[in-house]
Each structure stands twice: as structure tokens, then as C-alpha cells.
Length: 93
Image 1: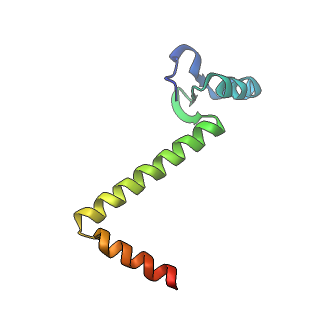
Image 2 (image 1 turned 60 degrees about the vertical axis):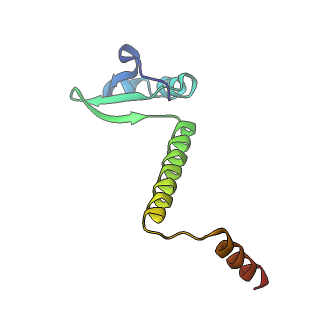
Image 3 (image 1 turned 30 degrees about the vertical axis):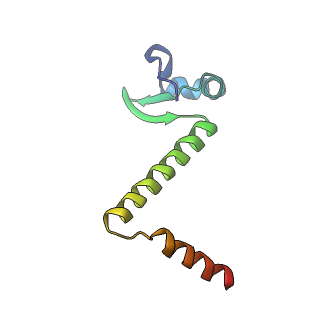
């Protein structure tokens, strides 16, 4: 995700409502999020579907790495020999 441009990428809810189509197009072409404010405070962030997918996948990957590290710390690991044996048993049914 590219960094926001404060002058362009922070808009009021009323501006967003009035120019939603234009802003949707801008999010997809600029690859920058748009922060939508309500009563002068951040209320939402608009990102492209591709950016959402990327961030979701990145989050799943980080969670998987954390889970693997926790398994290592708790000793929930197999040696090469144990893994080979488990795979052979699974393959044989």
C-alpha cells in the first residue's frame, strides 16, 4: 500500500457521498487508501479489493508463522525421521 497524501486522501463523508464513483476509481488507480472522516474524525478507510486481498493474505501468513514459532517453543515438532514415518503411514492408509 502506498502512503497517503494528506491533501488528497483524507475526505469528509459528505465529499465521499458526492464523489463516490470518482473516489472508488482513484483508490483502484492510485493504490492509496482514502480516509473518510465524519465530524472531523476518522470514521473509515477505503481500499481497493486487491489491497484488501493482499492485506488479508499477509495477515494469514503472519498468523501461520506465529503459530509455527509457538509450536517450536512448546516442543511440538517432529524430527526428520518422525516426519518420514508419519508421512509413510499416511500414504499407506
